[in-house]
Length: 167
Image (cartoon, one colour):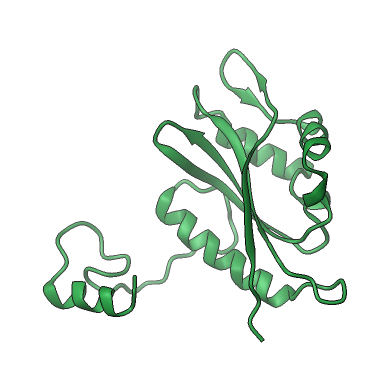
């Protein structure tokens, strides 16, 4: 049976404004969960990103099989967020949640892992400096004009296949 994930967010993360950059810390996490308690016990994947005038830039993709509250703001995740935020003078840190449905209290963990890989690969396209380590190895093949083909115009055939596959 197919697993149908739902998307929640973006949700602004409370942050302190330092002289050089914003800071997201354990107090930020506490304030975040006070404001969004309905998501605390959910599971799935999350995307930490920066919202700026040009849209969103993903910084880190994570997986939560226990709960978002237990996993999204762990100290090592906060360190990654800080490394990402250090590069931005403007913008707001946000979280997106891709929530797994639960059947009798247990989500499909293998589907969550596949989702994380998918999100990481797509986040890498948007931000080659993504802070994830696992799952960031790009495939060593491409399809000209369709997938990982670099710059340049796609051929008529490639454009037709993209339309056919609804890419």
